[in-house]
Amino acid sequence: MKKYNNYDLHFRFEVREGIDFKNAQYIHPLKQELVQSYVASFDQDLNIKAAIIFGSSVEFGCHSFSDLDICIERYDSEKGFRNYPSEYMEETDIVYGDLLGMTLRSEVEKKGIVVFDREEIYV
Image 1 (cartoon, rainbow, N blue to C red):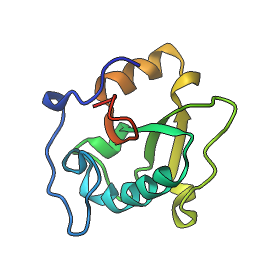
Image 2 (image 1 turned 90 degrees about the horizontal axis):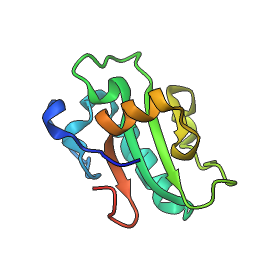
Image 3 (image 1 turned 30 degrees about the horizontal axis):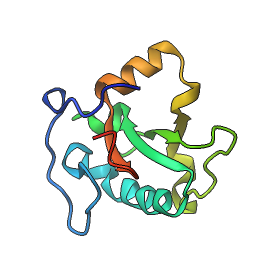
Image 4 (image 1 turned 180 degrees about the vertical axis):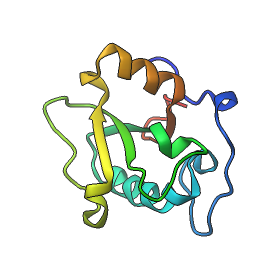
């Protein structure tokens, strides 16, 4: 993956009280609490290098039935992410950056917003 955070393609949303993850202003307010829970989980999993939110959660048209799409960059491609916040598992689609096809990779690179970056290299 090469490019993220194309801010000119995104709306800036109001950040809800208590939300403090990276680039929260680009995540729809309906999904900010959910993303906050995932960011805390990513911080505990040392295999997670970065997490990028894409899809409806970064768009104005997000609604209460929209799922959360997360692309995870990881150090060891043999290890999956298993530390899901249990109350949110069914609302989330997780894909791994190293397994993306060209079409989805292009969407994530163009429209993805980095919300977790362990090494500060994806910003």
